[in-house]
Length: 78
Image 1: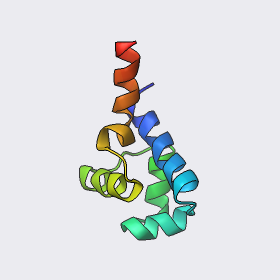
Image 2: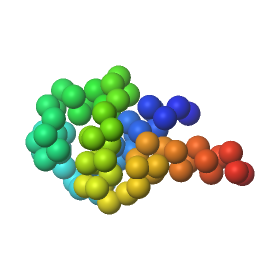
Image 3: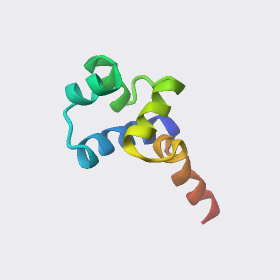
Image 4: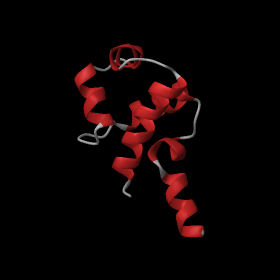
């Protein structure tokens, strides 16, 4: 698993599961286009650091969690 695909899954999961928001609603909330959010969620593009910070605050998770670093560190330590 790479960071990009892990982050893509985390973004979509938190948006749908925790916030129950559509792509359009969430994209508007964080100030990006729906196309940009869709590309992030499909792992085609990665958000810039400022957007990673914004999303981690909105989702109330650490940046390490959002980008999938916690899962990768756990796998290494196991």
